[in-house]
Image 1 (tube, rainbow, N blue to C red):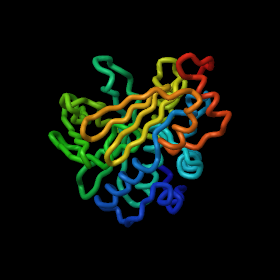
Image 2: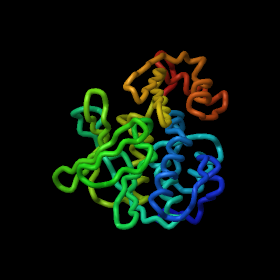
Image 3: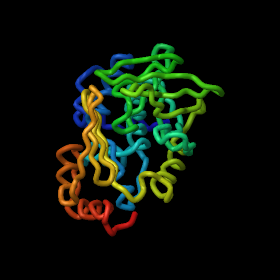
Image 4: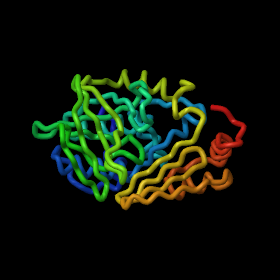
Length: 275
C-alpha cells in the first residue's frame, strides 16, 4: 500500500538519528516516531512558493531525507507509513478535521496513521507540526499519556469519532477529530490538492515552519516565531524579512537557496509576492 520497498532505510535512519532495532515491536514504533518528529521539521515552503507537492515515496524521500527539508502531513505520514510498512507493521491512514481553530467546522484535510501492534491500535502522527505527539498514543477512549512534559488524551464521540487532545495550562484543547474510515494514498492526493492550491487553505500564501523537541515547540507563521515550553511559558518574536533565511536554517534546520528565501520573505506582512 505505502511502497515501503522503495525506502532507503539507512538514509532515513541517518536523517532522523535513529539507532534502535527494526523488529515490529511497540518499543521500535515509539523510538521511530520520536526520532522522526524530532529529526524532520514540518513546513509548507513548496506550497508557499507555488510549487507542486508530489506524494510518491521517492520524491518525498528525496526532499525530506536527502535535501534537509521538511514537509506537511501528507509527506510526513506517507514517509512514516512506508518505513513502518517496510519493517512489518500493520498501518492504515485516517482523515481528520482540525479543532485548533475554535468553533469553525473545517473540511477533512489532516492525515494521520493508525498502527496495530499485538492487537492494539496506536495513533501515529509525524505530521501535525509542533502541536502533535512525540510518540504514538493508544487509540482507546480515555487514554492519557505524558510524553516528556507534554500530555495527550483520546476521547470517543458519536459515530465512531475519536478526538486527540492536548493538555494546556487552561485545560484540555482538542487538536483534531477523526473517523474510523480508512484512507488510501489516492485520498491523500485529493486532500493534498486542496491544501496546496485552494485559496481557503491555511498553507497557501504564507510561510509555515514548525519543529518539535522533547522540551520545546517552535512555530513560525509568516513573520511570527512562537516558542512554547513544557512549563507553559510562551515567547513570541517578530522575524525581520532579512532574518528569515537564518531562522529557517538555525531554528528549523531547513536549507534553502538565497532566491527561495527572498521569495518567501516577500510573503510576509508588507510583502508583494502572491502564492
